[in-house]
Length: 337
Image (cartoon, rainbow, N blue to C red; front, side, top):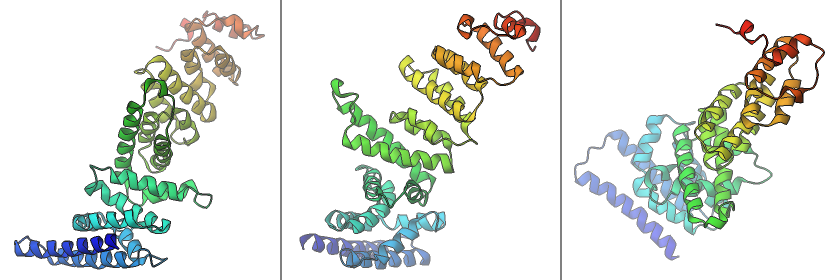
């Protein structure tokens, strides 16, 4: 009861704040007044329906007003501006609510609003983690989780990605040296959310933001699982360029991810240079064996010759010309100026 009284008092303070603004001569247009009154009505209805109604129409109405996918940017911005005095009471209502459905819908809305008014306490991330956990069940597939974030737009997704990177780094720094390979429960939840946002970036763009996010939470090996045929080449080139600035162990992970993507979508000539970079002779032999045309085999042979690969591992070839190419005999003749 004490918590309900506090919420009512906070609502009264919001109204008093509006009157104070008018008395101070703050410039409010007719449209501003309409928005303020609309928010007063919606928040008052939310406070009455939470814990009582199963449909939560007022909460859904507020969510629709703030969704980029259902409202204009100007409308969303204006509603966010005048939600400030209501943010605290709504957060308190979320904390005191006991029904999972109430918590989920309120957290979904307040995560977006928290991007503006809850930066210090990382409300946007914390509330989105709450939503992500609630929706992780057999009846809610990954596409639903992606769409829930997509409804609030790219800036919201980018902000969550930034919060995830910072929180994950803080978690890693707080662990002892002996526990560096251990992933605690909080970090696992961050990784789960990072996977969802990464898939959003892959579907909606920019796709390279997905690579940055997954690399920050040590999930580079999962990148091949979410890449599509229309972006694979750009992603692979990005992974290879990133590997050049990393320590050897990390660079190997990036190169292996690129190699796996090329194995799925590219050609043997795409992945052969990566196999050579990795120093993986088994991969080299397989990539060379996968070359189907005569032109591919010649180009692969010149590449192996130039890298001074031990051609004895390739065995004997009936094609004498290919054997000469492997020895580098015709390299200067076929070199394109």
